[in-house]
Image (cartoon, rainbow, N blue to C red; front, side):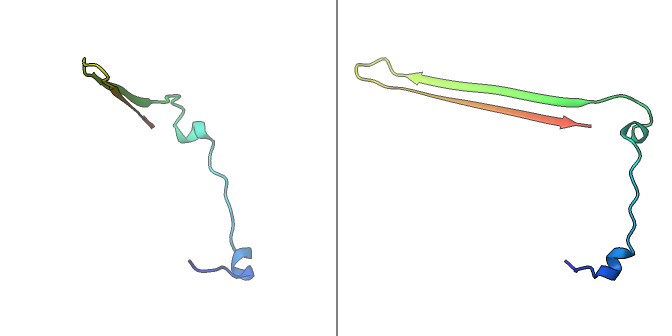
Length: 65
């Protein structure tokens, strides 16, 4: 990355972006796709002194436009 000198920095200008409504062309649509999944599995052998094992997984994915 190249460093700016004070002279170069003074020569820079800024401009505000239009409001969010303007960027959306006045369509007030907020769209999101949500995908959620829960999965679990359990095993318990029916013998004396056995132990039980279980696992659970969860995932959530959100994509917003």
